[in-house]
Image (cartoon, rainbow, N blue to C red; front, side, top):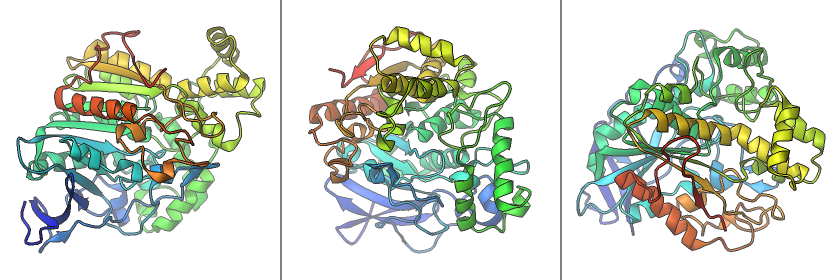
Length: 483
């Protein structure tokens, strides 16, 4: 690393030199390309290498993000820390942000984060994902932008599926070739993600193309059974065709501007993707996901990613994010509980009876939250954990995050996304607090954030977060933040 300016630092990558800026915990490089800009027909192709540049590319300012609809809130909850600035125009958005510790000492573990957002929104620029605390604690932290929505995940007969996941794989190849120049160890890379990002991590784990790219993986509030079948994905494709009034092929879509593709996604809300053999694995919360004949958990059970250590878990009240901010907790009826069960189960009445037996004093809202959270994330988390524990030589560790926010009059609880400020040690972020903030009005426990953040780093360093291994289905699940 060199620079004539003491406030900046230059690193030469395989595509050319980049100039970052120094900060108290090391240095940060923003908007560093790992693949070529996806434009025209290229929006629906596998990622390709970025053209080398001449001169030093400025990496001191944030860059563009993937085309996406505005998603800065869920009802009355401020979600801007999670979704970031939304769509920032510019073609060259297959980029990453890199926080690097000071260069002194041995090479450092690398952690690559894949953001969530329902496969349609978000970016590595979300304020929650500032990697300063990781750099402070000796980790090279990288956040990745990838294609979203129609360019990233629409099933097309004449294009590769899961193009957004292919972007993540391209980013990992870039990391292998370049991260040593930032002080990172290319042989010790932990891929981690949350929500849609966690589902992508599971897909990467199940993909043979990831061999040698990832040593460890963390799946936060994802699912190993969240992929659409080709038949289900085809329903989305047909709906896009109706919205755009064309046959959805790469040739026909190539000339459609990004603005129109983004606008078309509004017409996909509420699609019923249930078939005679499969329910919608994501319960209707998004019209995009990975696409495959087999679920990632099944591939892992067959031995894919068997050498990768896995840390996996979910939150105690995952489902409340989709209810409390919309005012749906207080209005929940027994019929709503049954309807929620029907989204994931062929016999909803038996499902409700089983949950009622497990939680005899629960309110209708509590039962609805539990069924929704399990349907979206909990069940698939358990299946992925069991698959990995049964087939992998790598170790498996499980957790459940249970610290409950008092936001939404206490109804939000330990909802989906609640663990992120603790993992990134970002409790002080102002937008997380107040009447619309994720963390509510009560001061969250800084010690818990320090412990969770340190556990994630310990796992990246050693493959052990600091608690007993999960050896089989029903094994040890570490409780985080449960009183």
